[in-house]
Length: 198
Image 1: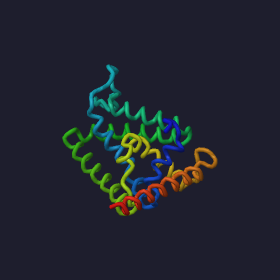
Image 2: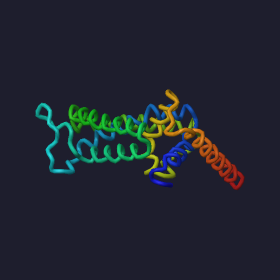
Image 3: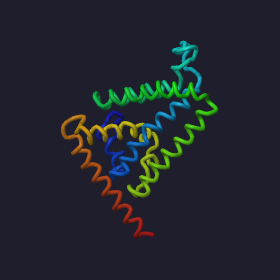
Image 4: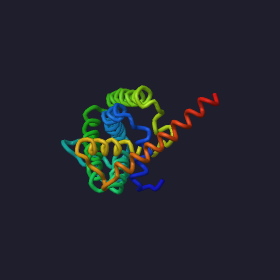
């Protein structure tokens, strides 16, 4: 799979997320996972010797691991699609700024508890979506890095397509849907063969 091949990334992830309820569950829970992860990353040490942005005697924006992840995700999404990728990049930076502010207010001793509770709720919701509605294991079991990297962008593109009919280019959704349908068919056939063998 090409690193910047949006169609293939989207088809891979979409093959694990074809049920509308599971997609809705992911739309509700994926970005909060990103946000709360960034809350914890606020407490990592700075990567550079540059002074953090200070507001009211507090270091709010620290160029640390959370910042680095934000930049990587933002650049990756913009390279996949200029319009939706730019929106995703803005959302990433919004999450970084807002999570930094929240982490500063909570302090580490409370922040990790809030993050743990939020992550448990969000991950549980997604696993229920896969087990009850999708009836297929999550994509992260087959390709962990790709699933973590694509999940926020996938749900954003799904929302843009559902609400505004957005396509990165004409025919994108039709081509991706055909690939997803073919991959789901192969998966179902494989599952049936495994049932017959056992």
